[in-house]
Amino acid sequence: YKPTTVEDLTALNALYRPGPIQGGMIDDFIERKWGRRKVEYLLPELETILRETLGVIVYQEQVMQIANALAGYSLGEADLLRRAMGKKDPAEMAKQRDRFVSGALERGHPRETIIQIFELMEQFAGYGFNKSHSAAYALLAYHTAYLKTHYPVEFMSALLTSEISKPENVVKYIKECREMEIPVEPPDVRYSDANFTPHGDKIRFGLTAIKNVGRNAIDSILAARDELTKEGRSFGGFQEFCEKIDLRLLNKRVIESLIKAGELDSFGRRAQLLASVDKTMERAQKTQRDREAGQAGLFGIFSAPAEGAKHDDLPNVPELDESQRLQMEKEVLGFFVSGHPLDKYAEKLRNLPSVVDVATALEMKPAPSNGRRNQAPENEISIAGVMVGLKVAKSKRSGELYAQAALEDATGKIDLICFPRDYERLAQPLRIEVPVLVRGQLRAEEEAAPKLCVSGIQALEDVKVRLPSNIRIRIPLDRVSETTLTELRDLVVSAPGPGRLMLNVEQGGQYCVVMEPEGMTVAADRAFMEKAELLLGRGMVQAVE
Image (cartoon, rainbow, N blue to C red; front, side, top):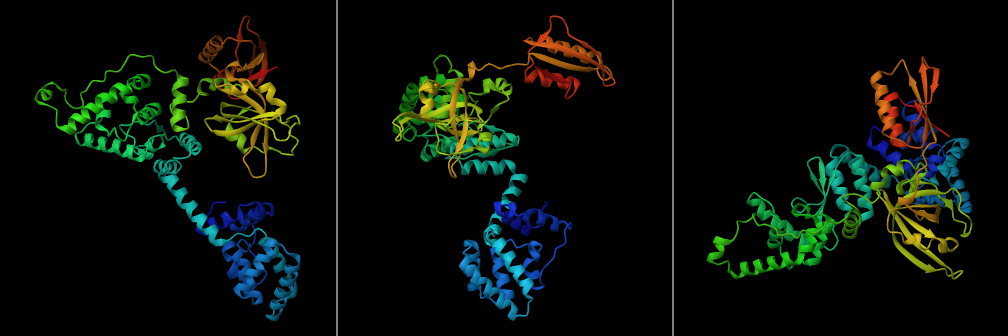
């Protein structure tokens, strides 16, 4: 399409809706825009009104202008015509047709042309768009597209900040940042501000995103940090951090939330920090009371270590395992920051071709809801994720138990529903807290987001990947070197598995010989296939059943 003016964007905004799309108006507009279709006007008077939209009626205002210019409608009468067309009231439309035709004939316009114009107006007015709205949206879209293109880090920082209270949207936009190759750095009390902020070519996580940490607490942290910045340094450790902030605003719960979010990782391991909160806060409170009372003392001046050199006496406790760390992040942020429970299964998921992510599932066309909830699901899909928010209730209709929950992955969240016919069988799997593979059918009701009607649940750890039983590798002798063959042999040796290996040696695109190396089998997973094709070329490695 390649718009060249804001007016083009305005028209595009109005045209990109179901009515104009189904009516072929977009294709007609584009063909006229680039001169592949002639721009024509049924009457000369229409050129002034429709020139901007290349002779196509796009806006409601144009319908009103045409009625005014051709049939002598006042603007008030023209608005009544627009409303009648929008409502498709047959009786009112008959009156308006007579009024329009008689008014136009009085002004000397040909009857057949006037009737044709009225029918065009009637056709387009049903899905005509308000130009003032379209222009406002188009200008906003142009501004934001410009900023996103030329100032991507600043734009995405502002976008994340605007959604900071909605974890599901923050997850979505962090994923978009990764797709744009903009790293979102983890939260760090030494650098993070209240909001998401640009940090070179990266984005620094905002303090406001952490639950239980209010604005007054954030201001106290920033004020303490600013004072140390004037001295050319930052917090020296956990002890100094607690001494410098206002502990009347940051109680134990707030500090624990900062630790769980990873804000204090620069001071030590999270398990150590959590184990030392009480002791560290107690010492810091005493230091603050002494400071306020002016009781540092003469001997304290000589015995106290210099500011910034305080040593944290952190207990030597085992570090949190990955699942504990991630669960804490989810608790205080609403999403995972330093990783995701599905990360360890990334390779397995790559080898399960029928699995889709949540974002893809939400965009798929679901089966219509027909009220027959005990009907066996068809066209099933599988989604991997972590189940949250399980609720079990009793059906008002049958008195049987059913369950609702949500499934989360790195791309978003989708609601789950387990109907009575499946609940008894899935009651225990629904309580699995580790990553799972959920099978089911997408269902939608009215305009709501689709839900997954659950028919099966399996812990992802227990899901078995079915690898090809035979793998054929084509080796074009005229395009491979001895080094390539050596690398291929090493690749096969490094991936033993159940797949029988067959080598099709080719010369000039023709098979010369088929070889089956004795004792050589291979695990032909997605990673193996990609590495082998990188050596030999796309399409040279095939799974054979």
